[in-house]
Image (cartoon, rainbow, N blue to C red; front, side, top):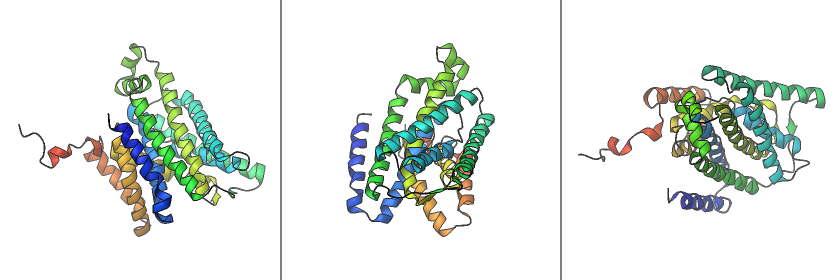
Amino acid sequence: MKLFYPAVAASGIILAAGPWVLSEFWLSLLMSCMMYVVLAVSWSMFSGATRYLSLATSALFGLGAYTTAWGYEFLPWPMLIVAGALVSAAFAAVLGAAVMHLRGTYFAILTFGMGELVKHSITYIEKSAFGTVGRVIMDVPSNDVVYWTVVFLALLTVLVYHWVANSRLGFAMRGIGADEQRAATFGVNPRIVKIVGFALTASLAGAIGAAMAVRWTYIDPHTAFHPFIGFQTVLIAMIGGAATLRGPLVAAIALSLLSDVLRLNFANAYLILLGTLLILSVLFMPQGIASVQWRKLLGRGDTK
């Protein structure tokens, strides 16, 4: 605990030096890793604590991306990031108010379905109002500015997770995950807590979507709301250990790199391989890699 803030500060200083010491390829790879750090850690902050399986990540990310696509000509760069966060948070609050009384499979299916509804709604708006689907994004910030923004959002997400986990909101969400009815008897308002937690998670996903949108020269609903983004986020969080911070944090970096390797070398089978990895993780490590007692596994545990 004492080393947490110094570790975050040191990581920020090291990562901030990236544009001066790394090539464009490695910067792009780091941005992809940091993107999934934001998505997986923020997803775990809500779903890992409450045990509500949200499949809305691609929708929240896409709303942030489309905020940039529609607003980059009118808003300065920092305001685009804030606007993306607010749009996704507002959507999550409305969605949460509508479906938070559900749980399990019903909640998962509805959050995924609402994401698809948003994608098709934006497609319809683009066709009917603008006569086309998709936009070319020009006059974007430099690659270095985008990189520093993504690093800032990754560090901010880690700090927010740490703050929430040690706050009354975090305790309330974990209480809901353990036993929602019992939490209510202790004075927790499950509905309000779930909506606030979901909206906070959504704001981070929307912010990173707004930042990453300028990485694409051309953006359309299929790209911005691609279901793979949500699938890989859940995969990373569950393999790492959704109830922890370090699990999704480490898994986001490792699996982002693994995903790129698989996509380059097994273009037609990498999704199958990632799905198999998720199945094996659920079967043999249901609490994620973070739950494994590595010292005992390596024979270095207490022998008493």
